[in-house]
Image (tube, rainbow, N blue to C red; front, side):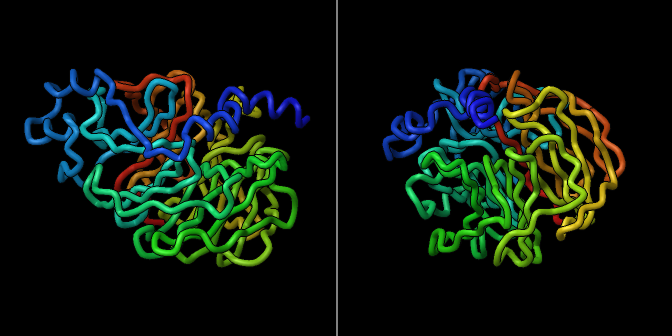
Length: 341
């Protein structure tokens, strides 16, 4: 089983050592795609400067999309309603790994492939960098992060260790002090895939081998395996405005039929209240908008963002945008503002 899993992960993660060596500890860089410059004419004049690289477009709503490809990597900001498939309105310099997240203040949290986590200031799209901190161990590979207040409070960072153990942990960090505490589960957490943190300070992590969801009350102590978790595979996590856990079932282990589940509780008993809802494409990560009426999912296979109408008991596909995206690599997506749960 482990050999199969590693083989599946190879296409998405690549050779972990080579990835880190490629970063070489250097400053993350970004190469803006030609589509960003070509799309300037389709962006309102007030925001055309953002397409050309201005990091402070004074636009407080939108959708962040991350791509990590061999020829270019970075974060791109799109209009929150992009039915017309417009190109990016702004960009951020980063080397994203898998998922990205936005906190309640519109601050953007980016796990980078060099083992660092960067926080960019909100609520303006593509705001200035507030700071960067490193994971506890050099063998840590941050794949996801979540926080109600990334600028001043605790940030839960989902870690996949690259020391050969395959073990996953959740590190608790702050922008000021970095990562200081490691949370482990009551059982094996292999190939940790996503993390979620509620506004009252509880933590969850999804893992792929075996498929499991782990819960930490108050983001402390030994994690408890949840019960009633019906996902057939790991995937991205979010929390809607009613406090329900929104969980994608799709990772490199098994993404033949990507679906979305909605659970209440999971502390540690889960009760399914919605799903499985079929997803339009192969999306491993997704996030809700400010009032939890829309869900954006990142289809990594073809490089597009699928937008859905969301309620806890229904999911309706609305439209797709892909201008300036390539596909074939890791992708994350997050609304600004995010779900307030």
